[in-house]
Image (cartoon, rainbow over the protein chains, first blue to last red):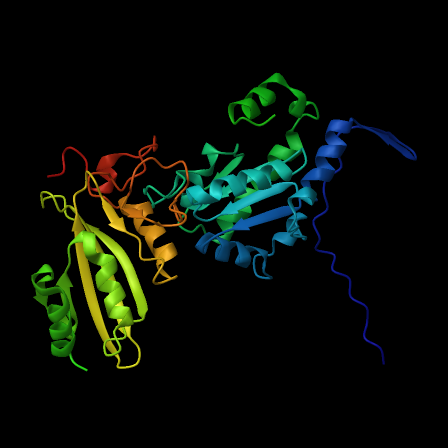
Length: 187
Length: 170
């Protein structure tokens, strides 16, 4: 006797954006539909250098399962990824490498600084350690903790999802954004 | 092979130039003038009896209070055949920290001398490629010298009091 087929009905489905719909069609704005698509298919690029990276591995594992949020696939190439997760202490000698990785990512791109070291240098108030990655690249979300628990990293990713969802499609062309990149010396 | 034999051989060859003999934890230690460090190491290397042909470590020490001999360069040598070790020190003034490079004798000294230059600013005369090895090239000071703070001078957001060195902490 075959096993009865079981369907998991307890699945959260992305909500349909506001729009005008009738029989057989639905009209809404690109902003909303593209934001929705991007939000639920963020490809993370982990840049893990120390203990925060271990917590990030737990976040990707089956217990916490970042894949639930559409970030199933780690891309270990910056050219394919949407969100850069910097987890761990960044030495000053590593800073140009991190910057290079950021420059290789295609727009639109987002950055999460995971943990105290990536956010501010943490306890490593030392001549050799970069005092926060925001000295070399712009950061969207900072996750506090030393190291942060996987739940905190999940929350950081969800904050980025909110940013992605609500971002105007023209934001990356705005003067404000260009001035921000200009302040980091990025064209 | 014992410390006494090594000491006698060295005294026989260099006489009073080697000073400050001691043997903490059984490791023979002495001080040599900066000018003859290459001769001493060459002798220890070539001598058929001593055979110190392995450079275990080369590093620096900063003594800011010793006038005229602020910087110390320490050589750790190993005779692998007889299993005996030797520590040699040489002192140079911080204003003119020139020491002869021993890279001709020990290839291992190349990166060790670069590291000592990087952190203490010791100028190894005759080194083939004396530039920073661990720190960023743009660094303008020698971080292990005691006159420079350990902290990052570019930090903006850290409250000294939270790090136990604020003005109210005595």
